[in-house]
Image 1 (cartoon, rainbow, N blue to C red):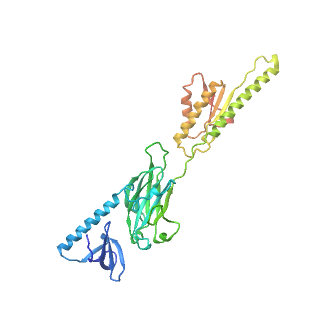
Image 2: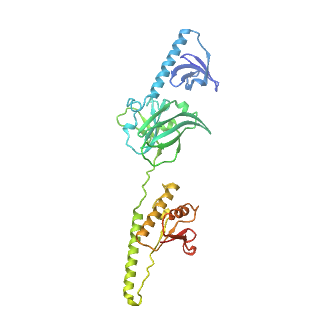
Length: 361
């Protein structure tokens, strides 16, 4: 139902009557009740109880509604990079801190407890995000919008009166992260956000961004944790120490053979090696890897060690792969079929348990 100023209306859910004093964007009106109090409500929450049949007034009212609706659609459709700085450009005044914010802009700084607010989602990260935004009503949700925000960009969500903020239990946001180039996958995230009139008085939230005249409440919603690259320095050092120990044993054995003299004409050196393929032994922090990535890393390490064993002419090499579901064990034994002249069997359980394969070269 469309209304015009001076229409007499009644609230559907309350025994209150009043007069329409102002037509607002987004299907809302301001109603002043019989006691002189002003209410900002959606059109659907009131019904007209007294109206004029003056056709010229009706036509003028409909024209005004169309103009206001057009203005509202224009405001919501303006992208941040084309909007005026004082209206939508928040991200341009911020340093990248890999955080998603909710930005609240006050329409009237002098009426903190009654003014309407603009709500924006600010993506100050290096990821593009797909998001949904909804109002919470207990276990139910009422959708506000869903869209994509590119990295270092922002999205206008809508205008809300402070009466509206008290009628639902805050906002729910869901995020998916992606990039046009190679990027590390991240799990979907759900975050909740609630704002009340008291937050407008909290000094920690109030931020005047450089080059802006309006008051902005900038509230962190989700901060991306910095993911560290796997530390392979310990792995390199481990291989280096292993090679040094093998060389030392070879030299010691050679010296021992020379000391024993001609009585022992032949000296058989048992050159062997044990490799633990548990991922905790290979990487300092494997928490960022999926199961498939872990198996691939372990299998690549197995093939590297096999190649080194052949080059260094080892007699025997034992791989500790654990029991688990047998995925790594089966993958290793499939790879062994590609190496000619090798024999393998389960390593002695009294020494290695039931999770090791012994290979003779």
